Image (cartoon, rainbow, N blue to C red; front, side, top):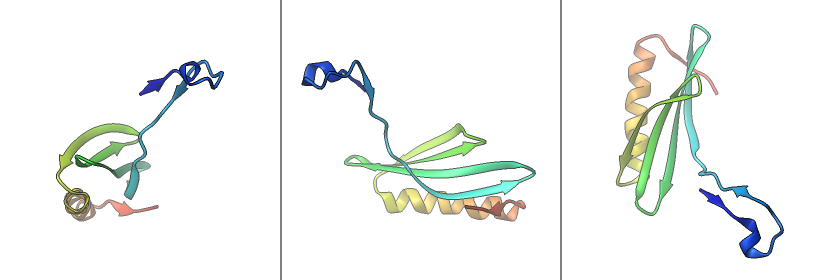
Length: 87
């Protein structure tokens, strides 16, 4: 979302407001990495998966706990396939 700071008398031309997401895990394999991030809001939570920084999949859940449970299920599958956790 982009807000115009001038309308609030701040003297700013433009400022960008970004959504904050929490990284809950990262795995690595063959110089590649996958991140899982969760972003919660009043409508629920969204889990996002990034492959080398590019968003490849996102899914909404009613609660943050359900989103993390989904992400942890994918983590177990990746670990079985040889991916190693890395922070």
